[in-house]
Length: 582
Image (tube, rainbow, N blue to C red; front, side, top):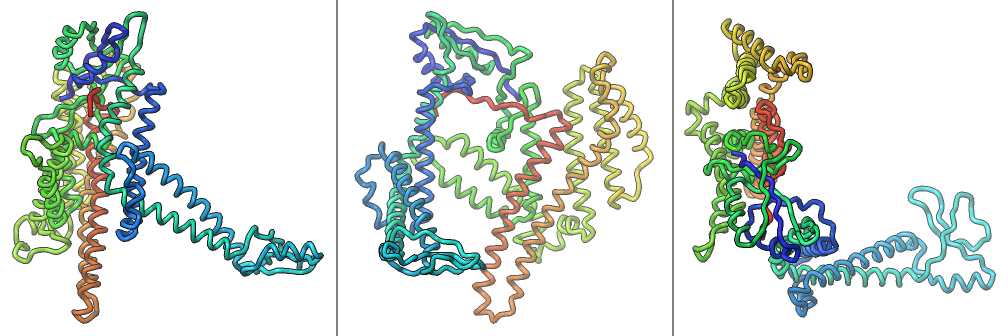
């Protein structure tokens, strides 16, 4: 469900404003609008957090770039730096390294220009000029351009004079070598300091709290002797807020949202499906406050889409093994604490998704692009392995029509006390008819039952007659003119679910091809093992990564576009984010 929200205005004595914010933060149930913060205190807190995050990135990058031996050599540079000063020291070292890198780039460019002339002494050239010998360096036409010295007043046609360098080439090369050595030393020191990265990352929650509190102070307005702040509070948290207000002598105004106000969306799915909120957060989406909570069908169908798009039980087993390792790795050591809610939610989601993929692998007998001999005669394997691919397409279209009809029937039930519910039920009938049309087009069905034409006709009449009420014809009448296009769009929506078959099949075929490349190497066995293992690791690794990308593209699309369009969910909301400590 989407939790109802109340608009809150909290008033307190002006000199108690900061303490009121601290108490409100301890409650952790009020969403404040902190987007307009612009005070120097907010900017300073945000800058400190940004510096800490940048220092972490610098240390992580240095740890990847420097070898262990080099890192051990630079271990003493930051030893005397206290943890509280580590961010500043890291950023100072990084700025020094950046300046040296710019200097090195200039030196390299200088060397590229003057290396063809050799290691001559520019001071001697200047002396010759003073004695009347016209020494000139010049670059000629052609690719690559020719460079040489002339002792004449006039240069040959097409040649361009090059200014004398400031120093000998060997001196420039020595400066470059010194700069590169200093860059390497700083990188090694930063790599050694990466072992203390937790001293920075452990400060993140506190820094984020400072940013949020400074933003809340900006949102706290003062009129004379009274300060006030506005926000949103879930309806079931109002009693707790009122009780706190009594003890703190606050004034509260709690009211319903006005038509021109958009409350934040707080989703509270059934307990079994609560982890899907982490997926919404990861995708950065939230339904509008007045829309429906589609968490349950989203999680159910997403699990199915995940399994079919990955399409390989072996990949699912890898994800499941890594997830089980994650459960073990994040298990509290003292037995008293719980895993963070977000970590627990993601581990639960990955357990469900990977288990569904393993089950799909069992049903289709697909394991790393190969199959198990003893399972080839199983009924599900034979049915899904239909060489014409008709059964797989039928399954995809069936999943699609069930998904979309669910959305329309849900709408109809929600509007059961309104005549527009008949239009929603009519759309369900249109979708069923389109399901048969699609299967007939691709040759799965040989024809369409006569009764379905009557269903289609009645469904169209219901959609045309009850989508718009007579009183709304002036404002929404144009929607009826779009009915033919919307009917064709419904046909396209069902066809869109064939991507589950197409992408899953592509993943399996890629795995099969890499297996064939590895096994069919024309080499003796003792020479074959290493390249075979490399081909399998690279091939399946690439395929695994592409499977992850297909989930982000296709599984998310089918839920947030096709299904949501029929359900009427625009994902235009913003998530409820209470003001509380990290």
